[in-house]
Length: 116
Image 1 (spheres, rainbow, N blue to C red):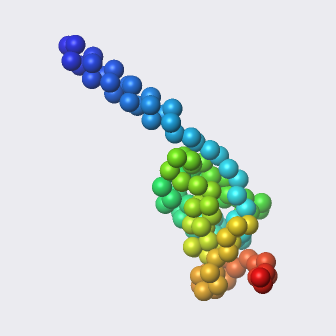
Image 2 (image 1 turned 45 degrees about the horizontal axis):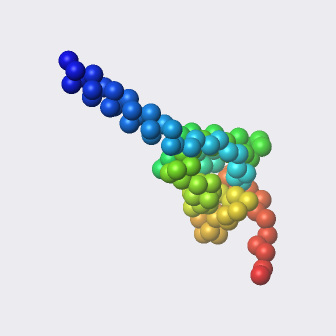
């Protein structure tokens, strides 16, 4: 009986440590797109990023609300995931060939490339 109580208290202790050290953040990120297919693509890509708890993209405002564990991922990694599937953010631009492969209704107006 004492052994069970010991292991239970040990489990609770370690579980509480992981909860204390995780830093859950909710952030809003501008992600460009147009339609429901864009929403599905963006949310799916972001949810594959390790540490992301939830993702919800709003097609009217073009804002992704994402909740993630900052000890496992960063806003940069989330934005890179969006760019990899063809959707620009304010920090990352999707490769032209990936953007061009999007369905015609998904092609949003892109900002011109700035030359250095």
